[in-house]
Structures are given as structure tokens and as C-alpha cells.
Image (tube, rainbow, N blue to C red; front, side):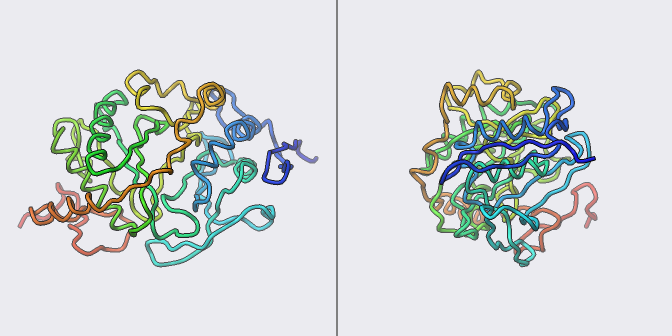
Length: 339
């Protein structure tokens, strides 16, 4: 027996697109009872802001065929049979392998991805036409055990000051989980390694100012009850949930752009698939003009060079990356051989 299906009319550049949603009543978030159709309708409702934040970028899809409590996998290139309006771009991964990767150019592509049970959207920090040179500096504030979202708030404010001192404008969103994401638009003049070094330089400065609250320690055993600045999210093919992307959490949280004025009082658990469309309609998109005044990471790279001269070198890369120049051993300190 054929499964049930419905069709959504999604506004496009030349009129509505018809996007077929099969099994629309499939429950993706059991706790609030949110279905695949609910997800698709959410993406239509936030479509313009979603595409403005995540469009024209290589993007990875985190898919949950059986819902967020079930198995998941990542998909990067469009499958066979994708609609003609779905675009891809060839990108190069840390392994030096190249492959086509999906690009979202309009809301219908996001809705089509929801048809494939995509829950989380992970956009690159670079544009499709120049995927080797990021146009966003992204910093992930990740609370460690013993800390929570409230601990990230004063750190984010201080990080904003750090970035302002080097001529960068900071924008902020909830991660959709326990942390915060701080973005700064930059001119696409440098490769990923330089941007990673710029993030490390900013993170180290933040750590110096707030040593009891902030850590750049890659190894969990060294972090303590502090907020980790995850510098490795700045690497090539390392991404975080995009703005307005749902998260695979029980209450259907959404990674939501906010204003700096909201930060002190915000409760990230209130931003969900059910609430964010009304918020967006009533308050507008806090990130609408994010990319209008990109800055330079040159001052941060000067800090990086200064720190190198002072003995603060490269930090570990993710385990699936090739060994990088100047990188310390990828050995957990407690397991390192005593010389």
C-alpha cells in the first residue's frame, strides 16, 4: 500500500515550488510530537532568514530517518533524482579529496532536505564560489560538565569586546543546546588554517582575561569546570548547526540568532520549532545585516605570531585530520609517556 504524502507550495525565485513530503505524519521528535510535516512547514515559515544565514554555502545534512531518538547519518552531496533547482559545488576536504556538496539557494531546497528527514543543517564558513576562503569567523562557546548556558553569557560579552578591539563585529546565536555561537563576518582573504589561527588567538586572549571561566584545552581532562572555546570548529569541513537550524534534542530546539541586548535574560530552551516562527515574524531577523561590514583577521594573526614568539604554539587538530606542521602529539596528557 502506498504511503501517504502531501505537497507543500514553497515560495521560490520564479513562483512557488511544489515539494512533495512523503510520510508527513512521521514523528521526528517524540516528546513534543513534532512530525516531518511540522518540520517542513517550519522551514517554509523561516525560509527567507534561513537561506540568508545558510544559503550559498556548502552544507552537510544530518539526517534521522527514524526520528531524533534513532540512528543518524551525514549526507553531503545531493542524491540521484534531486530536483533541478538543487545545486552542488565541488569542495576539497582535509584529506585533499574533492567531492560535490549540496548548496541551499532557496527555501524549497531546505524543505526538500526535510523530506529526506534532515533535522540539522551544517553550513560551511565559506561561500560556494570560493569555498577555500572563509567569510565568517566562528567561535563556539561550549560549557563543560559543571557549567551551563548561564556561564557562557559573561564570556560572550567579553569575547565581543575582544573582537571589537581588532575591528571585528560580533553577532551571536544560541547553539540550540547548552552553548553560544559567536560569528564575525570577515573578508575572504585567508585560507582555513589562517582563520583557525585567528580563532585560537582570540580564544587565548579571552582565556587570559577570564582564566577561571575559559579554557582552550583540547583534552577534556584538562578543561575543568570551565567553558571550552572549540577552536577546531574553525577547520575546513568542520561545521556547527546553522542559524535557524533545528537540533536533534528532545524538545526540538532551534539554534536562534539573538541580539546582544537580549543575551543576559534569554532562555535558549524557549526557542523551538513551534516558537521561532512567531518570534521571527514579530521581532524580525537579528542577523539580517550580518554580512554587510566584513572585517580583517590580520590583527588576530598578529596576535597569533606574538603568541608563537612567546612559546604558545599550534594546538591539536581533530583525530581524523592529517598530521599538521607544528602540531603537538595527539596523545591524551595522562597517557603520554613520561620522559
